Length: 153
Image (tube, rainbow, N blue to C red; front, side):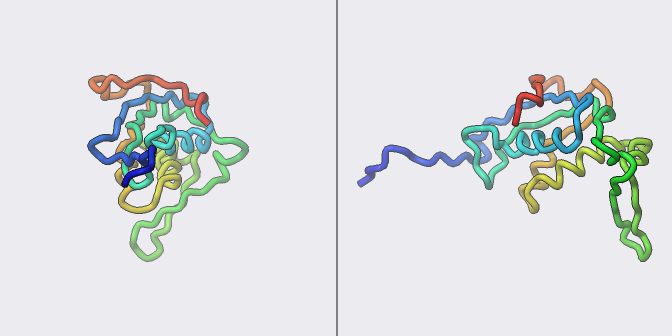
């Protein structure tokens, strides 16, 4: 006999309502922007959030080159990567990365990746993030809606 009047609704891949959103990163602090983007990618702002399913939105970030760091992080923060060869550890600051091609995109992607779950789900969620340096993007066919990221907590 089913006496419960409420059922827990679990969203799956087919029933998830995914939207496309555009975020303008002009004069946004990197960490604060990326926490909100990670929550959007994960779907945590939705009432139908399910932890083990990709139920978040597709996020387009424009003006990625205009993000800012607080304090002296622009010159003092160090990104470490490894080439795979002995002695192949490489270090870059955000100031150096900005000068390289796709540098601002790498800064944002690195920050968002650290805020997503580790494993298969996190890697799939990161595929829903699109980052562009200018104001132009190639996702006009999806009719993305522009949102003000400052209204989210």
